[in-house]
Length: 443
Ligand code: SF4
Ligand code: SF4
Image (cartoon, rainbow, N blue to C red; front, side, top):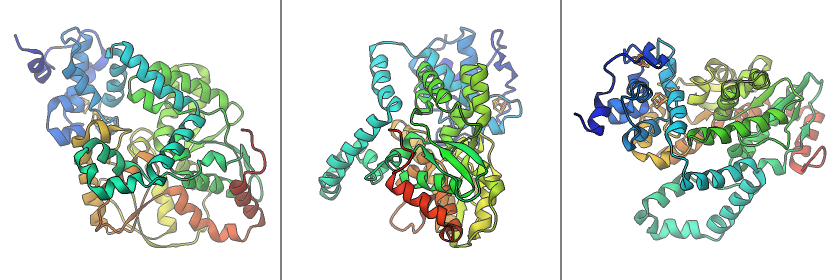
Protein backbone atom coordinates (compact mmCIF):
# COMPACT_ATOMS: atom_id res chain seq x y z
CA UNK A 1 0.00 0.00 0.00
CA UNK A 2 1.47 3.33 -1.02
CA UNK A 3 1.52 6.12 1.50
CA UNK A 4 -0.30 9.37 0.69
CA UNK A 5 2.74 11.06 -0.84
CA UNK A 6 3.40 8.06 -3.05
CA UNK A 7 -0.25 7.92 -4.09
CA UNK A 8 -0.04 11.51 -5.23
CA UNK A 9 2.91 10.66 -7.42
CA UNK A 10 1.23 7.73 -9.05
CA UNK A 11 -2.35 8.84 -9.39
CA UNK A 12 -3.82 8.49 -12.86
CA UNK A 13 -4.17 4.82 -13.59
CA UNK A 14 -7.62 3.36 -13.98
CA UNK A 15 -10.68 4.86 -15.58
CA UNK A 16 -12.77 7.38 -13.67
CA UNK A 17 -16.41 6.38 -13.34
CA UNK A 18 -17.64 9.56 -11.75
CA UNK A 19 -16.40 12.66 -13.51
CA UNK A 20 -16.07 14.12 -16.99
CA UNK A 21 -12.32 14.59 -16.65
CA UNK A 22 -11.81 11.26 -18.36
CA UNK A 23 -11.59 13.34 -21.55
CA UNK A 24 -8.00 14.04 -20.52
CA UNK A 25 -5.92 11.78 -22.77
CA UNK A 26 -2.77 12.45 -20.71
CA UNK A 27 -1.05 13.66 -23.84
CA UNK A 28 1.06 16.22 -21.89
CA UNK A 29 0.50 18.94 -24.50
CA UNK A 30 -0.18 21.23 -21.54
CA UNK A 31 2.95 20.42 -19.59
CA UNK A 32 5.61 22.72 -21.02
CA UNK A 33 3.17 25.66 -20.96
CA UNK A 34 2.77 25.31 -17.19
CA UNK A 35 5.00 27.54 -15.05
CA UNK A 36 4.66 25.41 -11.92
CA UNK A 37 5.69 22.28 -13.82
CA UNK A 38 8.58 24.10 -15.51
CA UNK A 39 9.90 25.26 -12.14
CA UNK A 40 9.59 21.91 -10.35
CA UNK A 41 9.40 19.19 -13.04
CA UNK A 42 6.91 17.44 -10.75
CA UNK A 43 3.88 15.70 -12.22
CA UNK A 44 1.78 16.89 -9.26
CA UNK A 45 2.63 20.47 -10.23
CA UNK A 46 1.54 19.99 -13.85
CA UNK A 47 -1.94 20.50 -15.38
CA UNK A 48 -2.15 16.83 -16.29
CA UNK A 49 -1.17 15.80 -12.77
CA UNK A 50 -3.74 18.13 -11.24
CA UNK A 51 -6.46 16.75 -13.49
CA UNK A 52 -5.58 13.22 -12.44
CA UNK A 53 -5.53 14.20 -8.77
CA UNK A 54 -8.97 15.76 -9.05
CA UNK A 55 -10.29 12.68 -10.82
CA UNK A 56 -8.87 10.45 -8.13
CA UNK A 57 -10.38 12.65 -5.41
CA UNK A 58 -13.77 12.65 -7.14
CA UNK A 59 -13.61 8.86 -7.47
CA UNK A 60 -12.73 8.45 -3.77
CA UNK A 61 -9.41 6.91 -4.70
CA UNK A 62 -7.62 9.79 -2.99
CA UNK A 63 -8.42 11.44 0.32
CA UNK A 64 -8.07 15.11 1.12
CA UNK A 65 -4.53 15.77 2.29
CA UNK A 66 -1.89 18.47 2.69
CA UNK A 67 -0.18 17.20 -0.46
CA UNK A 68 -3.38 17.40 -2.50
CA UNK A 69 -3.97 20.97 -1.33
CA UNK A 70 -0.41 21.93 -2.16
CA UNK A 71 -0.81 20.54 -5.66
CA UNK A 72 -3.95 22.63 -6.18
CA UNK A 73 -2.72 25.79 -4.45
CA UNK A 74 0.51 25.89 -6.46
CA UNK A 75 -1.49 26.40 -9.66
CA UNK A 76 -1.06 30.02 -10.76
CA UNK A 77 -4.40 30.03 -12.60
CA UNK A 78 -2.51 31.31 -15.64
CA UNK A 79 -4.76 29.25 -17.95
CA UNK A 80 -1.91 28.52 -20.39
CA UNK A 81 -2.83 24.84 -20.12
CA UNK A 82 -6.31 25.66 -21.38
CA UNK A 83 -4.91 27.24 -24.54
CA UNK A 84 -2.60 24.24 -25.04
CA UNK A 85 -5.10 21.44 -24.36
CA UNK A 86 -6.53 19.78 -27.49
CA UNK A 87 -9.39 18.28 -25.46
CA UNK A 88 -10.76 21.48 -23.95
CA UNK A 89 -9.91 20.56 -20.37
CA UNK A 90 -9.57 23.46 -17.92
CA UNK A 91 -7.07 22.33 -15.28
CA UNK A 92 -6.55 25.85 -13.91
CA UNK A 93 -10.21 26.54 -13.29
CA UNK A 94 -10.80 23.02 -11.99
CA UNK A 95 -8.00 23.53 -9.48
CA UNK A 96 -9.60 26.78 -8.27
CA UNK A 97 -12.98 25.14 -7.84
CA UNK A 98 -11.58 22.14 -6.04
CA UNK A 99 -9.67 24.38 -3.61
CA UNK A 100 -12.96 25.81 -2.44
CA UNK A 101 -14.41 22.35 -1.96
CA UNK A 102 -11.62 20.78 0.04
CA UNK A 103 -10.70 23.61 2.40
CA UNK A 104 -12.18 23.06 5.86
CA UNK A 105 -14.55 25.83 6.92
CA UNK A 106 -13.05 26.31 10.37
CA UNK A 107 -12.49 29.45 12.41
CA UNK A 108 -9.19 30.49 10.74
CA UNK A 109 -10.84 30.40 7.33
CA UNK A 110 -13.84 32.38 8.54
CA UNK A 111 -11.61 35.04 10.10
CA UNK A 112 -9.52 35.32 6.95
CA UNK A 113 -12.68 35.58 4.85
CA UNK A 114 -14.00 38.36 7.06
CA UNK A 115 -10.73 40.30 6.97
CA UNK A 116 -10.29 40.04 3.20
CA UNK A 117 -13.94 40.64 2.29
CA UNK A 118 -14.20 43.95 4.12
CA UNK A 119 -11.68 45.98 2.04
CA UNK A 120 -12.72 44.24 -1.18
CA UNK A 121 -16.36 45.19 -0.63
CA UNK A 122 -15.64 48.73 0.59
CA UNK A 123 -13.20 50.68 -1.58
CA UNK A 124 -12.97 53.39 1.09
CA UNK A 125 -11.52 50.87 3.52
CA UNK A 126 -8.85 49.80 1.06
CA UNK A 127 -8.05 53.42 0.27
CA UNK A 128 -7.73 54.16 3.99
CA UNK A 129 -5.41 51.17 4.46
CA UNK A 130 -3.16 52.18 1.59
CA UNK A 131 -3.17 55.79 2.79
CA UNK A 132 -2.07 54.65 6.25
CA UNK A 133 0.63 52.48 4.71
CA UNK A 134 1.86 55.42 2.67
CA UNK A 135 1.97 57.63 5.73
CA UNK A 136 3.53 55.17 8.16
CA UNK A 137 5.85 53.22 5.90
CA UNK A 138 6.84 55.64 3.17
CA UNK A 139 6.45 59.17 4.46
CA UNK A 140 7.93 58.63 7.92
CA UNK A 141 11.11 57.40 6.25
CA UNK A 142 10.67 53.90 7.76
CA UNK A 143 10.98 52.31 4.33
CA UNK A 144 14.15 54.20 3.53
CA UNK A 145 15.64 53.38 6.94
CA UNK A 146 14.79 49.66 6.67
CA UNK A 147 16.38 49.50 3.26
CA UNK A 148 19.52 51.46 4.03
CA UNK A 149 20.13 49.80 7.42
CA UNK A 150 20.27 46.35 5.83
CA UNK A 151 17.72 45.14 8.38
CA UNK A 152 15.38 43.95 5.64
CA UNK A 153 17.89 41.25 4.64
CA UNK A 154 17.24 39.44 7.92
CA UNK A 155 13.48 39.38 7.24
CA UNK A 156 13.03 37.69 3.86
CA UNK A 157 9.21 37.90 3.76
CA UNK A 158 9.22 41.59 4.65
CA UNK A 159 12.01 42.22 2.17
CA UNK A 160 9.93 40.57 -0.51
CA UNK A 161 6.84 42.58 0.40
CA UNK A 162 8.90 45.76 0.30
CA UNK A 163 10.31 44.89 -3.12
CA UNK A 164 6.81 44.42 -4.55
CA UNK A 165 5.23 47.46 -2.94
CA UNK A 166 5.34 50.41 -5.36
CA UNK A 167 5.40 54.01 -4.24
CA UNK A 168 1.79 54.45 -3.09
CA UNK A 169 0.19 57.42 -4.85
CA UNK A 170 -1.17 60.29 -2.77
CA UNK A 171 -4.71 59.98 -4.14
CA UNK A 172 -6.70 56.99 -5.37
CA UNK A 173 -8.33 57.25 -8.81
CA UNK A 174 -11.78 57.56 -7.22
CA UNK A 175 -10.80 60.89 -5.67
CA UNK A 176 -10.32 62.38 -9.16
CA UNK A 177 -12.92 60.44 -11.08
CA UNK A 178 -16.49 61.73 -11.34
CA UNK A 179 -19.22 59.16 -11.69
CA UNK A 180 -19.83 60.41 -15.22
CA UNK A 181 -17.13 61.82 -17.48
CA UNK A 182 -18.70 63.24 -20.63
CA UNK A 183 -17.68 62.36 -24.16
CA UNK A 184 -15.23 64.65 -25.87
CA UNK A 185 -16.57 66.04 -29.13
CA UNK A 186 -19.34 64.17 -30.92
CA UNK A 187 -20.95 61.65 -28.59
CA UNK A 188 -21.09 58.03 -29.79
CA UNK A 189 -22.63 56.48 -26.71
CA UNK A 190 -22.15 55.53 -23.07
CA UNK A 191 -19.80 52.92 -21.64
CA UNK A 192 -19.33 51.69 -18.11
CA UNK A 193 -15.81 51.70 -16.71
CA UNK A 194 -14.89 49.04 -14.17
CA UNK A 195 -12.33 50.54 -11.80
CA UNK A 196 -10.48 47.61 -10.26
CA UNK A 197 -9.13 47.75 -6.69
CA UNK A 198 -5.44 47.79 -7.64
CA UNK A 199 -5.97 50.27 -10.45
CA UNK A 200 -7.74 52.54 -7.98
CA UNK A 201 -5.17 52.58 -5.18
CA UNK A 202 -1.88 51.69 -6.88
CA UNK A 203 -2.17 52.87 -10.50
CA UNK A 204 -4.64 55.77 -10.54
CA UNK A 205 -2.82 57.59 -13.36
CA UNK A 206 -3.27 54.63 -15.70
CA UNK A 207 -6.94 54.32 -14.74
CA UNK A 208 -7.54 58.00 -15.45
CA UNK A 209 -5.73 57.61 -18.78
CA UNK A 210 -8.15 54.83 -19.73
CA UNK A 211 -11.14 57.04 -18.90
CA UNK A 212 -9.72 59.99 -20.85
CA UNK A 213 -9.10 57.79 -23.90
CA UNK A 214 -12.68 56.49 -23.78
CA UNK A 215 -13.99 60.04 -23.47
CA UNK A 216 -11.80 61.21 -26.33
CA UNK A 217 -13.21 58.44 -28.50
CA UNK A 218 -16.67 59.91 -27.99
CA UNK A 219 -18.09 57.99 -25.03
CA UNK A 220 -19.66 59.19 -21.83
CA UNK A 221 -17.87 57.12 -19.21
CA UNK A 222 -19.88 55.90 -16.25
CA UNK A 223 -17.93 54.63 -13.23
CA UNK A 224 -20.64 53.61 -10.76
CA UNK A 225 -19.87 54.18 -7.09
CA UNK A 226 -21.52 50.87 -6.24
CA UNK A 227 -18.84 48.68 -7.82
CA UNK A 228 -16.81 46.35 -5.61
CA UNK A 229 -13.85 44.03 -6.19
CA UNK A 230 -14.37 41.76 -9.22
CA UNK A 231 -14.00 38.70 -6.95
CA UNK A 232 -10.77 37.31 -8.44
CA UNK A 233 -8.80 37.36 -5.15
CA UNK A 234 -11.60 35.48 -3.40
CA UNK A 235 -11.77 32.86 -6.14
CA UNK A 236 -8.02 32.34 -5.79
CA UNK A 237 -8.44 31.78 -2.06
CA UNK A 238 -11.25 29.31 -2.64
CA UNK A 239 -13.94 31.68 -1.32
CA UNK A 240 -16.54 31.15 -4.01
CA UNK A 241 -19.51 32.44 -1.99
CA UNK A 242 -17.73 35.76 -1.42
CA UNK A 243 -16.85 35.97 -5.13
CA UNK A 244 -20.53 35.36 -5.97
CA UNK A 245 -21.62 38.19 -3.68
CA UNK A 246 -19.16 40.53 -5.40
CA UNK A 247 -20.44 39.45 -8.80
CA UNK A 248 -24.06 40.17 -7.80
CA UNK A 249 -23.17 43.67 -6.61
CA UNK A 250 -21.24 44.52 -9.78
CA UNK A 251 -24.07 43.24 -11.96
CA UNK A 252 -26.47 45.56 -10.14
CA UNK A 253 -24.06 48.52 -10.39
CA UNK A 254 -23.81 48.28 -14.19
CA UNK A 255 -27.44 47.62 -14.89
CA UNK A 256 -27.83 50.76 -17.03
CA UNK A 257 -25.03 50.27 -19.58
CA UNK A 258 -24.60 47.97 -22.56
CA UNK A 259 -20.79 47.89 -22.58
CA UNK A 260 -18.42 47.62 -19.60
CA UNK A 261 -14.76 48.37 -20.26
CA UNK A 262 -11.92 47.38 -17.96
CA UNK A 263 -8.20 48.04 -18.24
CA UNK A 264 -7.33 45.26 -15.76
CA UNK A 265 -6.93 41.86 -17.43
CA UNK A 266 -7.63 39.90 -14.24
CA UNK A 267 -10.85 41.85 -13.56
CA UNK A 268 -11.94 41.38 -17.17
CA UNK A 269 -11.41 37.63 -17.06
CA UNK A 270 -13.24 37.34 -13.77
CA UNK A 271 -16.22 39.38 -14.94
CA UNK A 272 -16.46 37.52 -18.25
CA UNK A 273 -16.70 34.41 -16.07
CA UNK A 274 -19.68 35.62 -13.99
CA UNK A 275 -21.94 33.71 -16.34
CA UNK A 276 -20.41 30.43 -15.14
CA UNK A 277 -20.07 31.55 -11.53
CA UNK A 278 -23.73 32.50 -11.09
CA UNK A 279 -25.34 30.69 -13.99
CA UNK A 280 -28.34 33.03 -14.21
CA UNK A 281 -29.59 35.18 -17.11
CA UNK A 282 -28.48 38.46 -15.54
CA UNK A 283 -24.93 37.15 -15.19
CA UNK A 284 -24.96 35.88 -18.76
CA UNK A 285 -26.03 39.33 -20.00
CA UNK A 286 -23.44 41.04 -17.80
CA UNK A 287 -20.54 38.88 -19.01
CA UNK A 288 -21.52 39.52 -22.63
CA UNK A 289 -21.14 43.27 -22.00
CA UNK A 290 -17.57 43.10 -20.66
CA UNK A 291 -14.72 44.24 -22.92
CA UNK A 292 -11.05 44.57 -22.30
CA UNK A 293 -9.79 48.13 -22.91
CA UNK A 294 -7.74 47.16 -25.99
CA UNK A 295 -10.52 44.99 -27.38
CA UNK A 296 -12.96 47.90 -27.15
CA UNK A 297 -10.86 50.84 -28.32
CA UNK A 298 -8.84 49.24 -31.10
CA UNK A 299 -11.49 49.50 -33.87
CA UNK A 300 -11.87 53.25 -33.19
CA UNK A 301 -8.20 54.17 -33.24
CA UNK A 302 -7.43 56.40 -36.21
CA UNK A 303 -4.19 58.20 -37.02
CA UNK A 304 -2.01 58.72 -33.99
CA UNK A 305 1.20 60.45 -33.04
CA UNK A 306 4.10 58.05 -33.43
CA UNK A 307 5.83 57.69 -30.08
CA UNK A 308 9.61 57.71 -30.00
CA UNK A 309 11.35 54.62 -28.60
CA UNK A 310 11.15 50.83 -28.76
CA UNK A 311 8.12 49.07 -27.32
CA UNK A 312 7.23 45.48 -26.63
CA UNK A 313 4.08 43.79 -25.32
CA UNK A 314 3.82 41.44 -22.35
CA UNK A 315 0.45 39.69 -22.66
CA UNK A 316 -1.18 39.07 -19.26
CA UNK A 317 -2.36 35.47 -18.88
CA UNK A 318 -5.84 36.64 -18.02
CA UNK A 319 -6.02 38.57 -21.25
CA UNK A 320 -4.41 36.13 -23.68
CA UNK A 321 -5.48 32.78 -22.24
CA UNK A 322 -8.55 33.52 -20.15
CA UNK A 323 -10.13 36.08 -22.50
CA UNK A 324 -8.50 35.09 -25.79
CA UNK A 325 -7.64 38.75 -26.49
CA UNK A 326 -4.24 38.52 -28.20
CA UNK A 327 -4.02 40.78 -31.26
CA UNK A 328 -5.81 44.08 -30.39
CA UNK A 329 -3.17 45.42 -27.95
CA UNK A 330 -0.37 44.59 -30.39
CA UNK A 331 -2.21 46.16 -33.31
CA UNK A 332 -2.57 49.35 -31.26
CA UNK A 333 1.10 49.34 -30.32
CA UNK A 334 2.23 48.70 -33.88
CA UNK A 335 0.27 51.77 -34.89
CA UNK A 336 1.75 54.12 -32.32
CA UNK A 337 5.22 52.77 -31.49
CA UNK A 338 8.32 54.19 -33.14
CA UNK A 339 9.52 50.60 -33.14
CA UNK A 340 7.62 47.52 -31.99
CA UNK A 341 9.67 44.50 -30.95
CA UNK A 342 8.16 41.04 -30.55
CA UNK A 343 8.68 39.46 -27.12
CA UNK A 344 9.47 35.74 -27.14
CA UNK A 345 6.84 33.85 -25.14
CA UNK A 346 4.87 37.09 -24.76
CA UNK A 347 1.85 35.25 -23.30
CA UNK A 348 3.77 33.15 -20.79
CA UNK A 349 3.05 33.83 -17.12
CA UNK A 350 5.42 36.25 -15.36
CA UNK A 351 4.74 34.54 -12.02
CA UNK A 352 2.69 37.25 -10.36
CA UNK A 353 -0.73 35.55 -10.01
CA UNK A 354 -2.26 37.68 -7.26
CA UNK A 355 -0.04 37.14 -4.21
CA UNK A 356 1.52 33.94 -5.55
CA UNK A 357 4.89 35.76 -5.54
CA UNK A 358 4.53 35.80 -1.74
CA UNK A 359 3.02 32.37 -1.13
CA UNK A 360 5.14 30.41 -3.64
CA UNK A 361 8.28 32.49 -4.16
CA UNK A 362 10.44 29.81 -5.82
CA UNK A 363 7.99 29.05 -8.61
CA UNK A 364 7.14 32.74 -9.04
CA UNK A 365 10.84 33.67 -9.29
CA UNK A 366 11.46 30.91 -11.82
CA UNK A 367 8.66 32.26 -14.04
CA UNK A 368 9.88 35.82 -13.59
CA UNK A 369 13.50 35.03 -14.48
CA UNK A 370 12.38 33.37 -17.70
CA UNK A 371 10.23 36.41 -18.55
CA UNK A 372 13.04 38.86 -17.75
CA UNK A 373 15.51 36.95 -19.90
CA UNK A 374 13.32 37.43 -22.96
CA UNK A 375 12.50 41.04 -22.08
CA UNK A 376 16.21 41.86 -21.89
CA UNK A 377 16.77 40.16 -25.25
CA UNK A 378 14.35 42.55 -26.95
CA UNK A 379 16.30 45.67 -25.95
CA UNK A 380 12.95 47.47 -25.74
CA UNK A 381 12.84 50.56 -23.55
CA UNK A 382 9.13 50.30 -22.71
CA UNK A 383 7.30 47.11 -21.74
CA UNK A 384 3.60 47.61 -22.24
CA UNK A 385 1.01 45.48 -20.48
CA UNK A 386 -2.46 45.74 -18.92
CA UNK A 387 -2.59 44.00 -15.59
CA UNK A 388 -1.55 45.42 -12.21
CA UNK A 389 -0.10 42.12 -11.00
CA UNK A 390 2.15 41.90 -14.07
CA UNK A 391 3.31 45.50 -13.62
CA UNK A 392 4.25 44.84 -9.98
CA UNK A 393 6.00 41.60 -10.86
CA UNK A 394 8.04 43.05 -13.72
CA UNK A 395 9.06 46.09 -11.67
CA UNK A 396 10.03 43.82 -8.74
CA UNK A 397 12.32 41.89 -11.09
CA UNK A 398 13.91 44.95 -12.62
CA UNK A 399 17.56 45.21 -11.69
CA UNK A 400 19.92 48.19 -11.68
CA UNK A 401 21.23 47.45 -15.17
CA UNK A 402 17.74 47.38 -16.69
CA UNK A 403 16.88 50.59 -18.49
CA UNK A 404 13.34 49.68 -19.51
CA UNK A 405 10.18 50.86 -17.89
CA UNK A 406 6.71 49.30 -17.61
CA UNK A 407 3.60 51.15 -18.81
CA UNK A 408 -0.08 50.45 -19.18
CA UNK A 409 -1.50 50.38 -22.67
CA UNK A 410 -3.93 53.15 -21.69
CA UNK A 411 -1.03 55.42 -20.73
CA UNK A 412 0.94 55.06 -23.95
CA UNK A 413 -2.21 55.32 -26.03
CA UNK A 414 -3.19 58.53 -24.29
CA UNK A 415 0.21 60.04 -25.00
CA UNK A 416 -0.12 59.05 -28.67
CA UNK A 417 -3.51 60.77 -28.72
CA UNK A 418 -2.20 63.94 -27.08
CA UNK A 419 -1.93 65.86 -30.33
CA UNK A 420 -5.63 65.33 -30.91
CA UNK A 421 -6.46 66.15 -27.31
CA UNK A 422 -4.47 69.36 -27.23
CA UNK A 423 -6.38 70.65 -30.22
CA UNK A 424 -9.71 69.94 -28.68
CA UNK A 425 -11.30 72.35 -26.21
CA UNK A 426 -13.69 69.83 -24.71
CA UNK A 427 -10.84 67.42 -24.00
CA UNK A 428 -9.23 70.15 -21.91
CA UNK A 429 -12.51 70.36 -20.01
CA UNK A 430 -12.43 66.60 -19.45
CA UNK A 431 -8.91 66.80 -18.05
CA UNK A 432 -9.97 69.60 -15.75
CA UNK A 433 -12.98 67.62 -14.65
CA UNK A 434 -10.85 64.60 -13.82
CA UNK A 435 -8.26 66.59 -11.94
CA UNK A 436 -10.73 68.73 -9.99
CA UNK A 437 -13.56 66.21 -9.71
CA UNK A 438 -16.05 69.07 -9.71
CA UNK A 439 -19.04 67.70 -11.60
CA UNK A 440 -21.15 64.62 -11.58
CA UNK A 441 -19.67 63.26 -8.41
CA UNK A 442 -21.62 60.89 -6.23
CA UNK A 443 -19.60 59.95 -3.19
S1 SF4 B 1 -5.17 18.35 -19.73
FE1 SF4 B 1 -5.36 18.35 -21.99
S2 SF4 B 1 -3.27 18.77 -22.74
FE2 SF4 B 1 -3.10 18.18 -20.59
S3 SF4 B 1 -2.71 15.98 -20.63
FE3 SF4 B 1 -4.94 16.22 -20.43
S4 SF4 B 1 -5.70 16.22 -22.55
FE4 SF4 B 1 -3.48 16.52 -22.70
S1 SF4 C 1 -3.42 27.28 -14.90
FE1 SF4 C 1 -1.22 27.62 -15.28
S2 SF4 C 1 -0.22 26.93 -13.38
FE2 SF4 C 1 -2.32 26.12 -13.35
S3 SF4 C 1 -2.13 24.06 -14.21
FE3 SF4 C 1 -2.64 25.45 -15.91
S4 SF4 C 1 -0.66 26.05 -16.80
FE4 SF4 C 1 -0.25 25.18 -14.76
